Image (cartoon, rainbow, N blue to C red; front, side):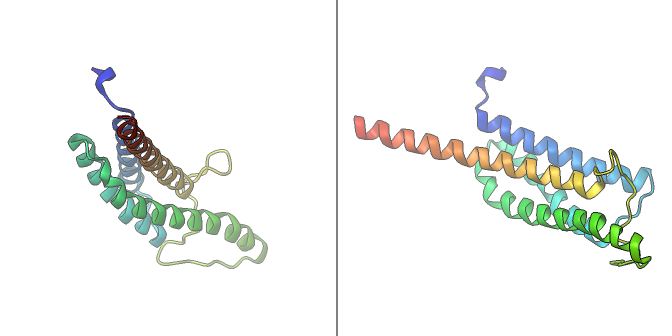
Length: 158
């Protein structure tokens, strides 16, 4: 059965799994562990949660054209995640030096609930998820471009 899948199907499935893990992870952190998300976390969620639904439907329908809708959401979400990660790292260092805080709402965007190896934070994990989804969509685009070019060359030879 696995041999009948195209590489683009596997990439689409992988992107869907990444979106599911990111969505379930964010829900676990907020609903089970009780970590309240800041405003930037909410924006990242707003961009990640629909990807779970879009990529799931696209995978089960075999629709690789979904990349047209997924890429903008993932790129914007990745940019917000990168910005959030920078705020956590740079502003947290500045806050330690000056003892001032730059909160972006009820919960500070500098809040660091999770810190593995002194650099893996929640915004960093979100950034990795968005990057993996972008990479999967880019791979699908390249594969479709290759197959379209191969079809044109085959028609020219015939």
